[in-house]
Amino acid sequence: MIHSLAGGVLADGQIYTFAKISFGEETAWYLAPDLLFLKEGDKVLAPQGHLTKEGTVVKLERGTKQTAPVPAGRLREVLSKV
Image (cartoon, rainbow, N blue to C red; front, side, top):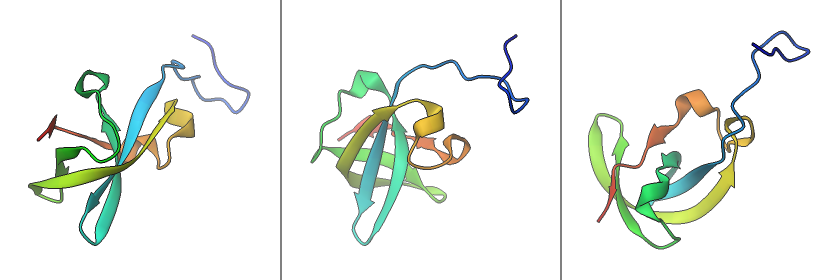
């Protein structure tokens, strides 16, 4: 196992898609499965709190979990396109 200089384990380096979803007044970042083929403006279902809500994709970014727009451990996944 390879460790970083800081003592942690290096990540896999896999590239992920992160989607910023708008739920009216609120926005949040989600992990977007590549199989959904999302683009800005798409309507999606995503968990918000204890509910599943419909939202709109307002921004997409690609990167590793180290470069995610929010800590990767806090990301929830987009469930489906509407």
